[in-house]
Amino acid sequence: MATKAVAVPEARIPPRERLLAAASELFYEEGVHTVGIDRIIERAGVAKASLYSAFGSKDELVRCYLQDRQAVRTERIERRVQGVDDPRERILVVFDYLHEQAEQPGFRGCAFYNASAESPPGGVIEQVTDEVREWTRALFHRLSTDAGATEPDTLAERLMVLYDGATAGARLDRDPEATTVARTMAATLIDAAIARP
Image (cartoon, rainbow, N blue to C red; front, top):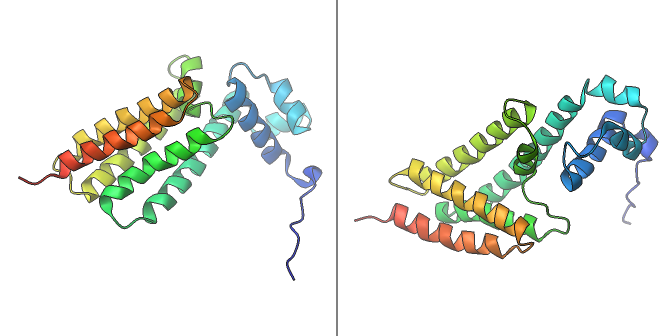
């Protein structure tokens, strides 16, 4: 006999998790600077003191929001990559993942790009975004090396540009087709990079 999933009453979810979930929704939908602390507290259904107790400041909440998004993204992409044996296809599944994200209702592009566009240089957002971009660049470099690219640095940089462009295009045009085009272009770049004389 199948067991029914039991929903956890919201009051039993720790305030920190409720705040982070509320911030994640609001920050992604409307922007990190547009959304004030009062709206997050109201959405989470907690006291203002809970936010400062859990995070200390809005900046730290923003940091945790972005780091949480990256942790989920990293886990999903790595799982997809590890599920494919062919080194060439392992690169392309990164673009498949992006396509799936772009097809989701409410897709608003890259949370890191969006937050960076709103923020002055030198702050928490720039720091986390730099870390995220370094992870993505390292991923493409590792996959390019595994695929046998003669110049993995060059291929990784070109793949980054395609990934960035596809993300922005899918958001701005409200059409995931940009990710399909990027995947096709990535396949061409990969084939040229691993071609043997």
